[in-house]
Length: 246
Image (cartoon, rainbow, N blue to C red; front, side, top):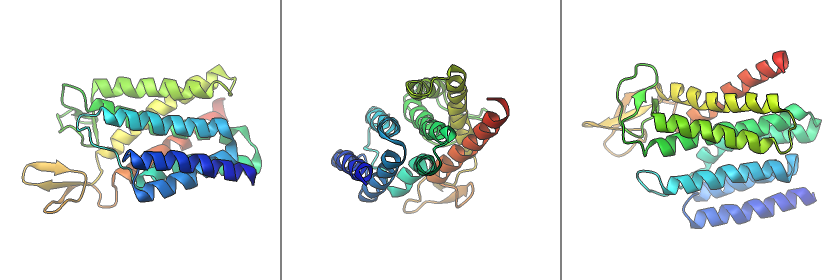
């Protein structure tokens, strides 16, 4: 019970500060508190610290993105990036199996690689290219990659995986986590090619804004769903690898 209260208090303070900085919406604050409390209560301070490192780093990076708009993440966006980590924290608390502890860090690392890649990739002086066709795309649309974004993704994979190295004393495992964290961002970009996109005149957008009509992609596959699916698919592939080779 004490860990729940501590997790709630820490999550609430950080979420409210994020709300003041317009990094979270009201629904984002509520979801961040729920997920943060779950991770702290289920897996402890270090796992919670990894979650905070993700949030603080991505919020900071968004301040330097090309459009410089506050991220103002809503509850669905927070849920898409943090729900699996919270789920594995719950499983870790119930069963105590180390694999769940590993999956917490990997899930957070996957979310970080995707966000770093997207935000830093926007700063590239070259237009992104479709990950499948290599055709030039508009900046900011899912499915496109830049060399700068790829480097950012690799760097994030190393940072978050080696952060886990402080408690997971298995170098082979850490390198494997790094590779899969990077793979997560690639899968995210691949799914982004079929993400719903809207159009008004010559302008494409991933948000359903006034006057925009659906141009391409699956109607139900928005950015939050892409993030969630990419995270989940990568974790499944990692689990298969872990069970057979590690």
